[in-house]
Image (spheres, rainbow, N blue to C red):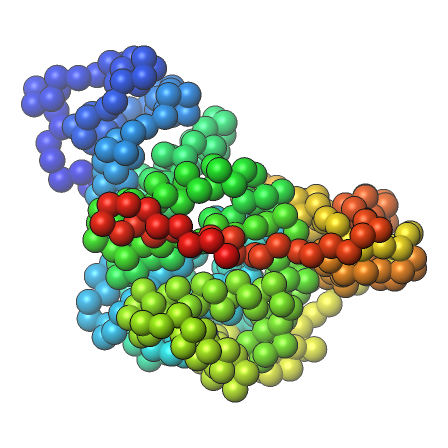
Amino acid sequence: MCYNGSLTKEVLPMTMTEIIEKKKEGQSLSREEIDYFIDGYCKNGIPDYQVSALLMAICFQGMDEEETFHLTESMLASGKTLDLSSIPGVKCDKHSTGGVGDKTSLILCPLVASLGVKVAKMSGRGLGFTGGTLDKLESIPGVRVSLSPSEFFEAVRKVGMAIVGQSTELVPADKKLYALRDVTGTVNSIPLIAASIMSKKLASGSDCILLDVKYGKGAFMADKAQAEKLAKEMVRIGMRFKKDTRAEITSMEQPLGLAIGNILEVVEAIQTLQGKGPSDLVDLVLHSGTTMLLQAGIYSDAKKARSALEKNLDNGKAFEVFRSFIKAQGGDVSFLDNPEKFPTAIYSYPVKSLKGGYIKSIDALDLGLISMELGAGREKKDDMIDPTAGIVLAKKVGDYVNKGDLLLTPYTERANKRDLLSRALGDYEFSDEAVTPGPVVEETIRLVDGEFEIEKE
């Protein structure tokens, strides 16, 4: 059942056409009108074409704070919610809006769990140039991402964390709406994005929520101002539900880390959990981990929290939690202990620089699209992923290269992909002057006494 109330025409005299007209004219929708729309669509009482019209009107006219909150609330009420109260300790969740090479959850979740934060996380699959956490996990032989509620709860109690796929019983309204938005050009609306993300995060039942809102060429949000607007909207919603919700604005102007692609990213996550990760990925994990430890109340001092995280990356405790997590979900941990056991792609194409200089920029979006063409991503939801496909970078922004130095290596099972090499070369911009890369995390946003506090790096 999508809504517990009785929204018949006798009780609530309205029609979907009237709601569409109202929003088309830029007026605010009431809680009752939003409930009517969500309830009717969930019960198949309102056709796709009318919902499409309303979604398009929302894209053009927007929604105010109250409308967005009520939309989230109504979507949340469309299904079940998880009650994590039987799991001792503070439960934290983390969500990323997605980017090229983003394997953060594989490192961050076991790291904060190693310091006492419980992480009960539901994740999704990749589509297009952004990779999905579930796809990465399933590239480890044996891993199950579909657990029963009792298995999920037991894993969090015993290991300190679990990552599973989104339950079909949680927020069914979002599943229906997103499928329609995806084919009607109505994905890119901040109120709709905020309600979609936050309804699922709230349904997952955690006490604290950390949002990684990425912007740049390799992210869903291309513009920093829009990323900040989305972050504030989601933080505001979370706090109204009395969840400690904070957001980090992170740059995705170049790929995160060195690896793009499922097995390649799992191997990089293993290396990072063993204290040998690339600096930008480590910085992001430590920053996000510090925020989560502060949210959970494990530490009250940011410097002490970060120091504890650094220690558990170096001493192997975070990696041991990762091993336990993979084992609890059926995975073969011998692949973690010996990453050389992972299969490798048939073809690899080293790409060497045709010039010397400092790397000024890397087109993360195009490298993500190339990786998808190699087989590492999905163009359509039912596409099969090649877990061995992807790209490994040898150089990042700020590095100096000589002519003939290796820039990156694409991997694929697909023949005749050499034509992508010159395209990949074009994704690098060089400078004669030294280049200093900016911080990965640019600012942290929280809401205190009704006012936003923005901590810039």
